[in-house]
Image (cartoon, rainbow, N blue to C red; front, side, top):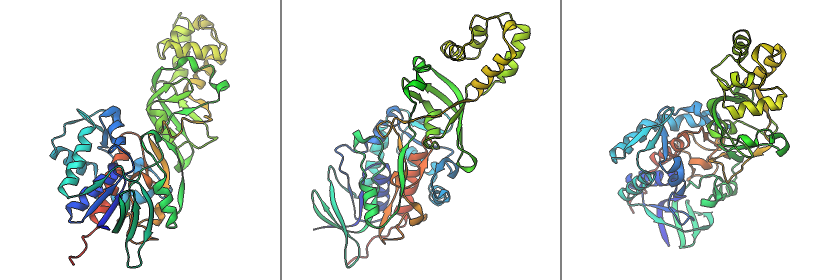
Length: 404
């Protein structure tokens, strides 16, 4: 029977990073993954260039039922620490938007870097290799039934990711394993995902598919409120773009969204000034501030004539128009689901894990890291930073087994 100090289940961002660090600390490490290709989620991320972290990542950029949990790991392995590693490996990168860092060349460079880190630690990897069962041993540690035979280990790290993008191998293995050992699961749901609307409700806007503009979108109240100033994208079935992907993590079924389609403009004042000073038609005046397709759809929806000269427009109509465009209220009927979600919201309840080591409080030697844990980052490199930070917190807590 094969025997290791550490077995890591999941060869994604968190799993590979943890395995490499632990191996370099002197542990005998095995990584297992059921998927045929290595780190596919890294490979497709960021349009193939991997948004590998965010310069400004901090606890405020993460959601969890236990919000303080992520503080320790994020403080002890920061974005700057990972940037230093990327730089040491000679990977050129650039900042695209709001602290988001991407490889200049390819996401494949991050995968190769993680492989080199694992090689430096003598890490073994079996892939593809499924795990059929996990048991504790009377003398401590774990025994795994794998497709390549039984394996024993002192410590077991679960880095199996979330349920998003099933076509590249997402699975609920990590959640089932957590439940096997008595852990509670915060209900998983798709996050960073486009939102959809009932066909009848969306009919006036379906023709706007492909149109994009900067907005402020918000939902929820108090501490549960989310608010983002990002680009919005109209689709055939609903809304997408960074603004909607961000707000989707805060949205709950039945909640309305409020969207300001002119966040930099006092539209009511602008329309009143135009009424006093301009002879242009209403449609042309709005066209100064919005895409023409949006103007046409909005005026048709409100029953207002685009050809009406501004001085002839009623104050009441202009007020309604301004309030609707500045606070468009609409309620999604759902999302595009796991196939389009970038990450999972929810996961293993962090109240049953150590924030210092990511070790289970219920089963000694069992750790959960990365997306399988109930810590979800914003769009923009934050979820990769959680992978690196949680993996580092776990790996640094592990010591090699004493020599026989």
